[in-house]
Image (tube, rainbow, N blue to C red; front, side, top):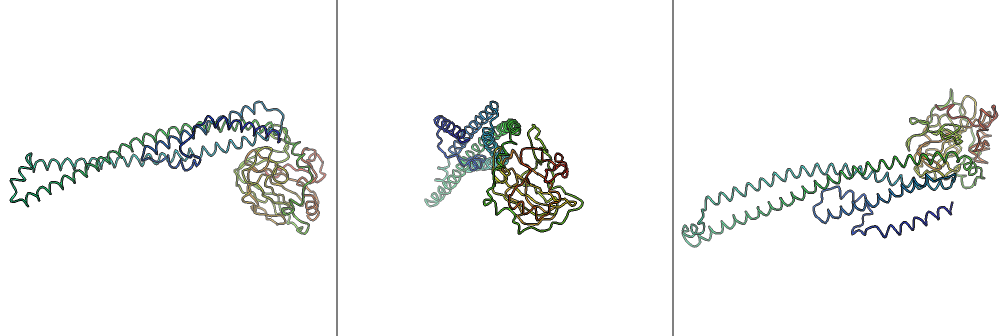
Length: 459
């Protein structure tokens, strides 16, 4: 695995060097894309700002081209993939990174399109108002000039001199005409400014509309890319699921480091009675639906529980009155990918295991791939049926948002015995193992502990 990542790192370094030689050097720092989207979806007031926004568009195009090439490389890797679980894991991490980049860009583009539309509508309204203002000023200046021409005549200076009573009267008349002329000049200058602003705004409407159309086309392209990426990832998941059982068994069969998980595990001192739930279990998750059942994935690989696909953050409720044996949320809610062995048991991500007594039988139920946020319980805590204990996520060895549920029939084992056994071993599987259906309750003929089909209780 390390060798493979070194090869990837070396290849990426070489690609980065070669790409760096080809990419243009920008006059602006466009790394804060959110700020530049905010700026460039608004009308610009200068050619330098328009130029900067054109540079940002070029920068975004370069980034998208890089992403397109990465997606192409990913798909080519999928098509040449053989039975190499470690390589599958590396590709799964690559896919998750590509998916996140696409998701961010799609979100930015959708926000930019909405902002552009609002700014275009406001700009068109401003242009309409400015056009009316220009017409008003234009008419006022023309009217004043006509009035001055009719009142003063063509021989204005001679009339002023000859019609003056004295020198002081002549100077007063000349001063009045100068004030009128200066006032006209100010209005003419203001009119010219308005006309210049009007032309800039009209050109900005054209630019913003072109930018909006380009963003719409880019959004459509990226949604198609996301769909293609998801389809190729599903092919990767299908291949991985056929190989995962043995690898998962190896990872989880390793002796647990009890010291590292002790704070999340129940102690024997916490043992107590559990009120028997009658008449049975309630659904732990509302909404969503089964994405993979027990005992096999749709692709054919062994699957020892029920996968319930729901959005991240969906509440997980206690299906019966019970006692929490283990609860830990060490990883981010949406950090899962194929081959991610974080959490306990290995690959579980954020997990909870609980005991409950239903109709006189003791059961252990585990929930895996939970969210970091929303976990409301801790080891040793008693819970009531229907109480929210956690939230669903996409953590650990997970290919998407869901909750993995397993049910173990402990038979007539007492709560004290179960707590003591779990406190000493933290064995989520209760001795039934991780790579075989031979320990299912159907196969053991009633010998316990055994694995139950969660679908038996949660339909």
